[in-house]
Picture 1 (cartoon, rainbow, N blue to C red):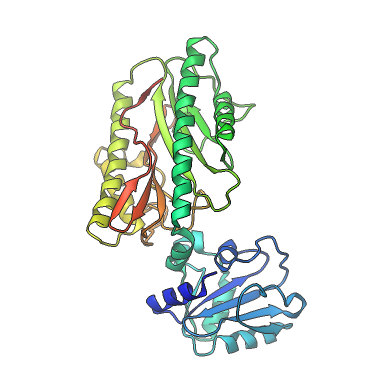
Picture 2: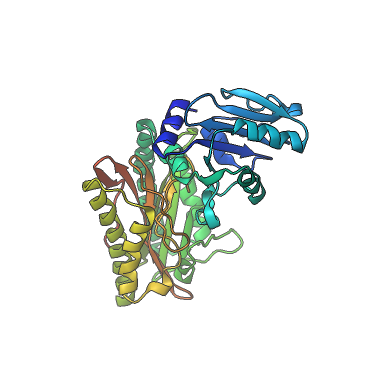
Length: 391
């Protein structure tokens, strides 16, 4: 935990402090930001208050009095609920505007960890509880130079794995050994392991109408055979193995087996590609102009292209997600559909750009790249698919 940086950020946001609270590991964000052991046993409520100025304060139950010993600050203890509320009020004395892992109306649910009852207690103390979403982005999503290097290392290796995957499908089909989706996943996983990459689950290989299910996951028991003439989507993600601080790389490409694309497939791919590029251009323009940009703005840029082409109802998910040490990180997402994400796309953060159009029972197209923002610039970190792959 970087106390000086947190207190400086609190002052920049005109906040009196940041109150962390947990019970039974309800708030994993708190453990990461504070540097606490995420595996430690927690059976009683604890509170940790970082004021904009001054010494942090901690409140712990007497039978678990050492739970916050790893972080600095004055310790307060409680046993009864009356004592808890009295001690909490005392340590928050003088603070009015307090950030918590809370989101009004649960609008940004990714940071909405605090229960309504705890917020009620604080409001009864005449505290204004505001969302910590922007603070979480700053301390969870902003990457170090070493972390950025791990993203590029994963990118170089995973792009090679994907290329090998397309070749594997083509070789197997031409040899008459038509592979199934699960077999392709097995091939990709083995290739990733050889490259020193880790993936938490997946990847996904979706053939024919399965590509219209944006979260399709084939299994050994239920897996479509890939034939010549099929439309195929591969979504693959990985990070460097045995590196807890490593950053993910996450991409999706599409192609056709043994033929040229139909006019309809080409139209849908071109629309998705243009929507992807519109979101990229919107982020790049904002960064070139040194202008703050929120996640929802990039989503709008992509979605407007697809709506204008008449396919808006078949674009059923957000345009992108934050990428950090977790695949779906806690920074700003490119989203004005599932949420209205007003969090800023901060410098030195990474996120996916992945619009898609899906026709149930037919096929679906998604084109996914990753972007990295830098002061004054924003870049795509890997190759960008321009045409459907001919497998």
